[in-house]
Image (cartoon, rainbow, N blue to C red):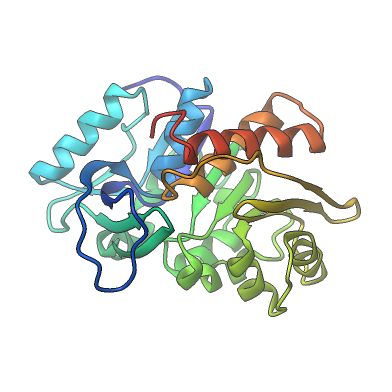
Amino acid sequence: MSASPDILCIGSILWDIIGRAPTSMRVGSDVPGRITRLPGGVAMNIAMTLRRFGMTPALLTAIGRDAEGDELIAACDRMGLVTAHVYRSDDLPTDRYMAIEGANGLIAAIADAHSLEAAGDKILRPLADARLGSADAPWSGPIALDGNLTEALLADIAASPLFAAADLRVAPASPGKAERLLPLLGHPAATLYVNLEEANILSKVQSATAPDAARALLDRGAAAVLVTDGGRAAAEGRRGAGVIEGAPPPVLVTRVTGAGDTFMAAHIVAEARGLPREAALAEALRAAAAYVSGEIGS
């Protein structure tokens, strides 16, 4: 697809292999369910939601020149995502993510995103060679950035002139990778989207609620943060403007993988439409609730 993008999604684009069971599970459970394979990854989930809400995202990622990679590119093209700037590697396989979910939520997951990490700054070439920007005329629109990149590359991004004019929207890939975002914690143009566990890892404070965690992140130097906590109150905080909170609508949870990415994308769209803080937070919470209830597709 060759359309002109209005937002960049940088990070993991891979195949999600998700096993879901309608019953509660524990370690060692062996139960009937369904196994699906869908395009996924943090950047992909954000891009799909952005596209559903009318934006045109371009993908910056690494995808192998293998059969799985060709299928993934074709799936992205069918959804209207801009794939012209994807780094295709002859040597690296297409990444994958595998998760098991029960009625009681996520049981376990493994992210095999080694190709994205190995590709490094090759995925950022379009931002430097004038296809999407250059050091003299950097990309000036929004960028959704995910924490599957290496800590070294995220540190480079935090200081890079290629990102100096961008509106950075940043999400960790998982609690285990939350500390990779530390170089971006004090970035003046970065908005962090984290859950309560990830917020506590970044702030080094064990907050009990999302509003408290948002305040702790602001105290640590963050410019803007959004903190979710499952079905409990979420919070949005901005340096110099304090913290607001909102309650997610109560729904029956049918899936959890991708909910945070949907929340982030919906909030980006709401702010792009000019909604005030409270309304943008409420819109994002409604979209995430609709996603986990199965009301909207993945």
